[in-house]
Length: 594
Image 1 (cartoon, helix red, strand yellow):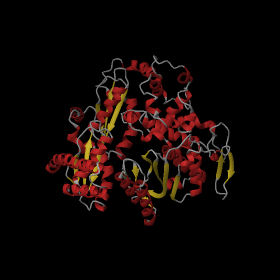
Image 2 (cartoon, helix red, strand yellow):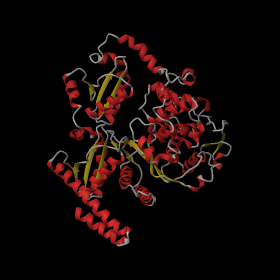
Image 3 (cartoon, one colour):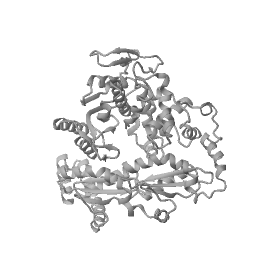
Image 4 (cartoon, one colour):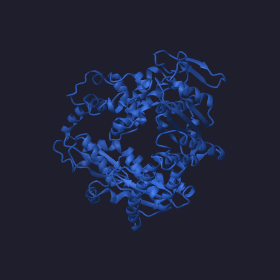
């Protein structure tokens, strides 16, 4: 996923006029004027003709509903594809314009924002039909993901600023990109617009070039564990690749990668593409990987991010402790003097400063000990609290006897406590996570703070509405739309929460279908919990006797339903009935469950 503000930052660092990107072989590209005279073309030794024969077996289809020239988009796509060692997927790219952000700002499906719709109804319907055909005719073994397909279509109707690549299966990828007004009308001129859109497109294309995103087995198991390498390495690889291809001075590339880290005091868990690119740069500098592995995509062929680079190895622990350097380049100490037994630079610094607090009672002087940590993380919490937690979030803080501090945030008290506890354990901090803030109000030391601490041992299922508030708010508009247009206003929504604060949901035209959909996503994301009925039609029924009754009934019905389907499937497999008979019998089973 591409965060649009990242490339806007570039323009504050450099004057764009006259710059050319460095070629992978170290040479400088040749700059020329396009055939229509409207833009510059940068070519590296005709490398757009050097695409491997394997890459030519797969298509990149660009459907351009935006005002940006299709020819340029295709050139950028071809250039990015030509860098790959191999490709194994067909890619559909849909681009469209959106207008101003709708105020008050409202997110849908997570962090995507609603904008003024600029596509005509005809263009929207054409785009929705195109996406529907791509899903249904994908040939993926698991069949079409109708829930995702409907979410994307709803986003087009509502002017959502989609900026995503979806892996339907190994050989079918989908990219949907909205070009917001601020990107199309950059005040720094046409070159700035070109840089923004080029970076945007090639970032998302790189995700479509990553072979192993659909890998299962041990790769998937490790990826789904908290604090895995996958999120930052996948996003960091896309950012590194896209920025390497931008028409900017080659000599300033390291500065471009590290400057936002230094200026924004980023830590692991912040913007994953920015953080990931910096970590990958350090891995290159320390000889763990070659830049060519990123640029030709081979780093993402066989899940090296999890199976080769063990996050618990001494080398990776060192890299993950030292990527957020204090300058615009890595120090010689970090690059050359690595000793696995020696504490990291940050740990040495903490040991030195901890002497200042030797006589402090840390849990009673939390705001004093952790003042610097809280000040550094407070703006980020306030932003997330406002935009994702509906201004009802929580922050917990813990301090150790050595003066080190960590924090956790979440949409509920329990989720923030779990997040803080996880950070505490990851950094070997001995202490108790204390509630520091509720919303924007600092409550540390109050009676409310003490009550919140006691609350954290309560089972998460009892607080599903509190824990999943952000998730529900993000997905409720999409459910309402589908419920009205596809379920005849008689749909259902189920919700499930895990003790770590993660949530999933399922929807369907019947209670059973919604329960099955919720169970599917629960298992897909390794969430431990029970799917609970949350809404019937547009009425929230969670916590009512009807909700409890439905949960019990649906579990039994689901088991009977699955067993009956297995039985008729067996008849089909053994040839006793044909496909037409199977479909009729299946429909009859479904009808009896409604």
